[in-house]
Amino acid sequence: MAASTLEDVIRGDVPLARAIFNDERKRRLIPQLQRDGWPIFDLAGKRCAFPADLAAHARKAIQRGLARKRGGA
Image (cartoon, rainbow, N blue to C red):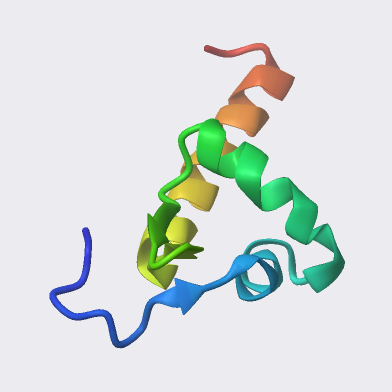
């Protein structure tokens, strides 16, 4: 679901933390999310992601969390 251009890419740990957590102070969690398989990639020495990919991954993570909480898969 990657975009054809890099116009809307979120670039850097602080903007990524703001986009994911709505809190730029959580920027130290970004490397762990990248290792855990979130759609975050390195570009020119900075961690980057596309907003649509982050939103889709966050929705899936929330659904998995709710399913575990309910005793599902």
